[in-house]
Length: 327
Ligand code: TRP
Image (cartoon, rainbow, N blue to C red; front, side):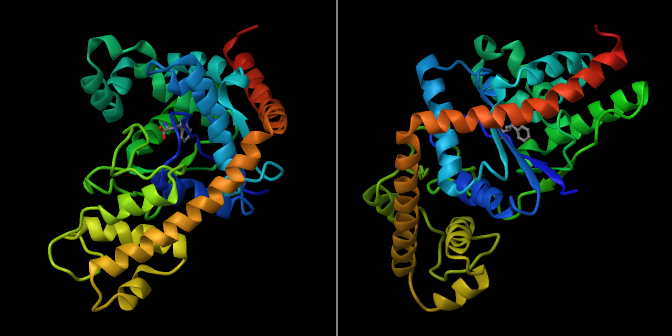
């Protein structure tokens, strides 16, 4: 049997070049070697207050972007989390197998709650990692590809699964986190911070919907490091980031690019990168517009994903309920 892989994606706005290079492009590339599940995690999105119309739109647009990048719905299971009720139901059940202490130690919760203040410290935000555990444990997942910021959540879901299995016998597969190598694409203006789609209208964030002119502008204005050599190193975070993007899109290695640009300045390097990204994104945008224009087909694709996900998830939920005495 193929190994099962699951990656959740938040419908919190247009995906960025960082989401594309660091995650979605790899998911599309690897989907034939594994059985992949891609929930669009709208129940996670509501842990931060959302505009309802925008959330609904972003959910469909996120699905359309995944399809545009090449997620193939006949190979992979693409679905909307809220449409598979087992996620919420198992989430509630698993709340009783995670402790307040464990959730309070999650660094993402601590960071977010500090930023949001008391009003934003919703119970759902605190509970977010438990729902994430349900997302994964419902499907006997082998691997969860994650960035550094989600690793602690995967560790917690492993603990929850193990605890449950110890109490009732083997029910859950214990998933392994795999690091998305080279996945961290940084903000073009602040290369010490991840390029994040929640940084709206940010000159350092390239969105997949940016026009070629905007792409050229953002890349030409990207900060660079002191010195003028184009090489990846720990003391050159800005240039390393640009090289990582260049390598991922051109399918060349960083070493080959360093050789190509030896003795050339930042100007030539940046303008080549800008062209490359501008062309890549306009191709994606063309696919995106075709896919999102056919709304009925998009909805039908998501219905099919929902049915295939639910068939597996409902079965796991039934096993769990039987184990703990829920009628
Ligand atoms: N928390 C993840 C993020 O913000 C999204 C997510 C939700 C997820 N459920 C998941 C990722 C399950 C992997 C597996 O990126």
